[in-house]
Length: 392
Image (cartoon, rainbow, N blue to C red; front, side, top):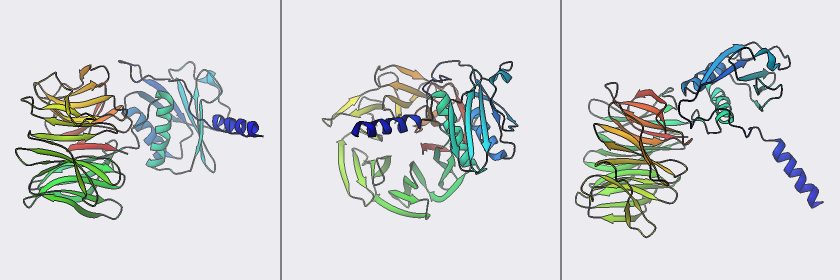
């Protein structure tokens, strides 16, 4: 009886899998050819089609054709073999939207899933995310959000956009100086200067409420939000610095103290990174398990603004050499790669998918937020602003 139960669970689990194991487009390879897709069956759902098409083509990995009509006929791969189409996405819309994905070499779908009927951008983001992951084997950026800062004549403000810089939301937050913003769920954490005091505050998007957590005459710089109730930050007294962890009630604990000018603390699940001038110029350090600093950047005389990818094997940072440029340091091999060249490029933030980052760049003469791939191949401007943070 136990064996039958185990086999039943095994069969249910594996027959419910929707993603194929094969990768149809390896986006980690340089100079890859775009994958051509044809989309059928979205004639009466233009928002869904345009969202899927715009999302996939925005990444520059896909060429999308359509929408072509679908009249319920069986998929015939021979009809596409004379074209350059390699993948066909078919939508059958009845009480729900049935999405099937085919290659032009087989009549059997490589992907099949039902969605609720909604001709809206969110459903388009959801469908395009699953198509992207199916074909590349990587998580998609289409459900990400970006929080960032814009400068006004006498203040700075906090804004949120969708992953591509659209659907702008003004939080209404205005401060004299904002040094860091982090989006976690429905909460925006930020450090700022206002009225002679530095503070770390949290803004709740759902009810538009704002609350101050910590206030100090010393400079406060938010690092990362560890979870819904804790965050990492730095307090600088001019001739000394302290890296601390606090909960949202303001109960804090000092993690590391030094007599140097430190900044930009960053958290990963097993490490804390920060910037210090103890070597004579800004360099990036890691706090070891013993609580001691270990220098990890050695190329370049001015390295700052670290950001760790979700897999914790890559570190992005800004390095000053003929302007600020974004570099990627492989934490396993020690190999360092410069991925930007034009203008000043700063403030990297890895997106949850791990393949893309947001940065600030002035390459077009004004401060703009860019979405770039970790290999530097994709670099797309999104909107004006700076201090971007990419989140779900």
